[in-house]
Image (cartoon, rainbow, N blue to C red; front, side, top):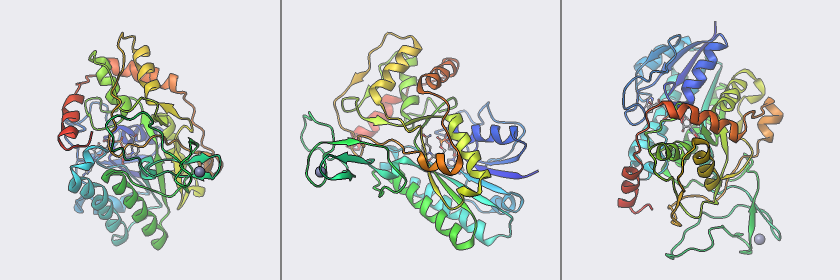
Length: 370
Ligand SMILES: NC(=O)c1ccc[n+]([C@@H]2O[C@H](COP(=O)([O-])OP(=O)(O)OC[C@H]3O[C@@H](n4cnc5c(N)ncnc54)[C@H](O)[C@@H]3O)[C@@H](O)[C@H]2O)c1
Ligand SMILES: [Zn+2]
């Protein structure tokens, strides 16, 4: 039986992947330090009892050296994942995400092993703004916005060459990167380091640039992560979801099971080796639309609170061009947004969701980030 190591396998994406791997007949080892912010109550009740769990930090070598001798594949998902929080917990984010990956790579190249492939979780955040089209100049990538004025009436970025209107279009993997947070920098470094070491030692590495993943087991009480989870914990507690800007900024939301499919395809298919893939739905959805859909599907009588405020570093639009993963790996997202959100809500109604938005918001405000 082939063995797979999933770092961060107690987390949102990792735990779903663990289930799928076990379902497909793999032996699974999870390495996860049960980060307090993600797991305030300790071991989550959903962990898969058929997997072997090692509650250890990715930055430690001892256990990793032992595990690496046994495994055929590695998914490296362990990370600190709060974009805003990374702007003031700089050392911690760099340490876990960059040094943690460095530690794994170090063990990989310096311990005898039979690892056939390493798959890492990268992120859409490393693009900064996505790709846009200008009528006059063609494909362009605008600079990150930087508003000085208090009252903003036009949120859209402009063409960097002629300053005219531009429209967002699907972002391909080849777009130059522009990190807008320490989190994004850490993900970019992680991706580059892994691909470089993979090529150097002929260990196939695959980098998956996840867009906005949503689904059950997202930590609803962690105010530093995904927008769906943050909105849901607000709605569930009868508070309005708080929207920055005018709500018409867009993102690409992808259902967790589709992401797991992309992970399995990347592991199994040789065509994935040494490649970078966008993992998104390929569709743009505005933040306001997400908030309204969640409220409607939850059956609550609340209105989103639109702040018309700019959050430093936020991009306006980015959604995935998924042609590469489609053509090379045969990937196709199967769940529509409405279907996915319905399932998300069914789950959210049953679990505890402390609304810690205010606390997180106060922290950002104190640091001058909103
Ligand atoms: N959720 C998304 O929308 C999204 C988007 C882009 C990229 N990603 C990436 O996907 C991966 C998984 O994200 P997620 O949403 O499942 O996050 P998550 O926070 O739910 O899971 C991360 C897991 O890593 C563990 N972890 C944290 N620090 C660790 C350390 N020092 N040692 C060992 N384990 C540690 C945590 O305990 C947690 O179980 C991350 O690498 C993240 O950057 C996620
Ligand atoms: Zn132009």
